[in-house]
Amino acid sequence: MYKELVINAIGPEIRVALMEDGTIVELYVERNDQSNISGNIYKGRVQRVLPGMQAAFVNIGLNQAAFIYVDDVIDGKNAGYLEHVYLSNKEEEADDSLQPETKIEDDDLPSPKSKSSIEELLTEGQDILVQIARSPIGSKGARLTSYISIPGRFLVLMPTVDHIGISRRIPDETERLRLKELILSLRPQNFGFIVRTAGEGMTEDKIVKEMEFLVNLWADIQKKFKTAASPAMMHEELTVTLRSVRDLLAHDADKVIIDSPSVYKSVLSFTEKFMPRLNGSVIQYDGPEPIFDVYNLEGDIVRALKKKVWLKCGGYIIIEITEALVAIDVNTGRYVGKHNFEETVLKTNLEAVKEIAYQIRLRNLGGIIIIDFIDMERKSNQEKVYNSLVEALKKDKSKTNVLPMSDMGLIQMTRKRVVKSLNRMLCEPCFYCDGEGTLLSKPTICNNIYREVYRLCQDVTGDRISLRVHPEIADLLLGEANDIIISLEKQLQRRVVIYPVTEFHIEEFNIMEIDME
Image (cartoon, rainbow, N blue to C red):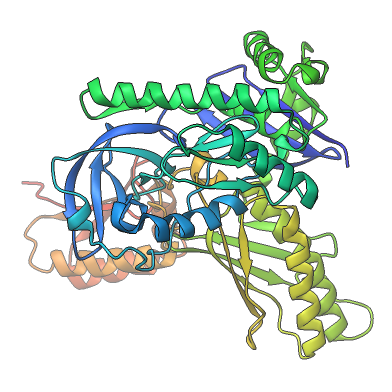
């Protein structure tokens, strides 16, 4: 499979697309705001401790207070047990994903693992060194952890724990043992390290250099923590461009194409310093056409924001993103099949599986995901769909957990979420419907107007009633729904005059009594 990174850095935002055989499978967007701050390290001040939630709010200098759960606070008394829980997840996630991962699914309240309570560990006004485990999403503030991890090209430094881990993507047991013994013999001060996938085959000299770099970086962070006034940023993660080059170019992509000359130079400088053998893989695009247009990506991005996605067979899926979960519904649509209903349903569901796995990855959907497949009578067909989904999700680097299909044809799954989904990143609630997704129908609005006029104007003394409405409602009241106006005039013994107002919301109307004297 041929993979390449396409980076659009000309303009107010940076967009990084990971392509597989010419198809976009992942998209990362970075803007000059606080939307993606995962991995940043801060000196924060505890604002409020919540014993009932076993959590605390921490001021780290953002517009919205961040929060930290008791299990994410280093507890000296129970460090060994908590570190085991933390590291068992951290080792599994020491792969080539662009974003640092938090140790617990972000929508799940943590299970009680710490023997100490939050009020024993933190007090209001206390300064604390924390790292962003998950960027702010919607109304939720950033999630924090005091288990600091600093990723490099080959290693991840964990200065707060004593542990050596090897990425599970390095399968050779001999190589795993070699790397573990090498790290044990070289690491300073019993610092914890995880060898990333890119560290496979790494020489001792490279290990020493990266260890020195990460340890010096940690020493600098500690020095800043002692002198800086809280809240303050101690360390900022690399930009999305440099992260993508660092984490994807060596294993997940064959080349990277960049349209901005300045960003191209910075990437080239980065690869010369840390990845010299990959210099030839960095290419500058200088064509007249926008780079995303050349790869036909703009249309793919627009389609990734739509609720309805059509399947090749004629069926379709509907993707609804809510505050608590993502609901995906599979429908046969125009597909009627050739032989029998069960075969038609199975084919639609199997095709939907591939599209669902693709859309989940592209849209970066996370948290709880409920998939409503078309009902199948045969248990064997249900298992086929389930197994196909599990297999399709293996391409996804984010951690997923899929439960078997229920008797109602539902599959429940979770996917680790650290940053906003594509929809939350690029869209905002409709100012017209306020995010409801629907509006009152025109007949309903006309009927509401009738009731409101009748309620307010039974005792009017003026000569007529002025009714200001949206132009489309005015057309309806003067045309098909004119019987509403006739009925009002008859009952109120007053003339009702309709004025269209272009600036009105379609559901908005204004009633006024007019006295001609």
